[in-house]
Length: 158
Picture 1 (cartoon, rainbow, N blue to C red):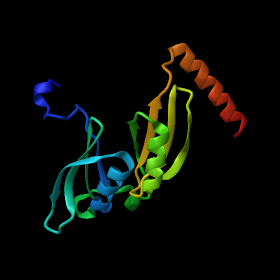
Picture 2: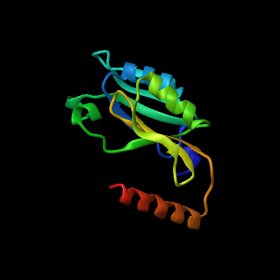
Picture 3: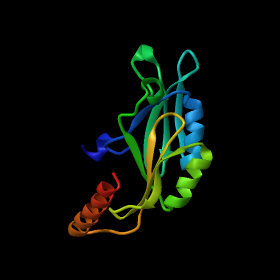
């Protein structure tokens, strides 16, 4: 897609998530990830139909769950079909900030085999966020060797 066909500030792919209590979600994403609110559109019932937040250089669209429109949050479906991944300058500080804002640990922060300082949290709205800082660039061979070692350790502990 030609960049002239994109609205200013957007990338080719923009995630859109459905949440329960969009006002609280926007506040949480601000406290946890430093998100800034870009726009907000309320429906006739006062609930947020569409909002946009910016985290770093990326936009995320979000809206209130509404079964009538077929939009269901992970809290309504009791599951999450995907997750979001955020690269930050300091994974440890960002992970701690997310926990203090109300997130829970899904995967503890560690030096991951693929070269990132990485962990995953679940937000209070059912979405999971991978938080990472690249600490080491690996060649394909180094990545394969590290992955094989990690999988062998995981299999031994299963």
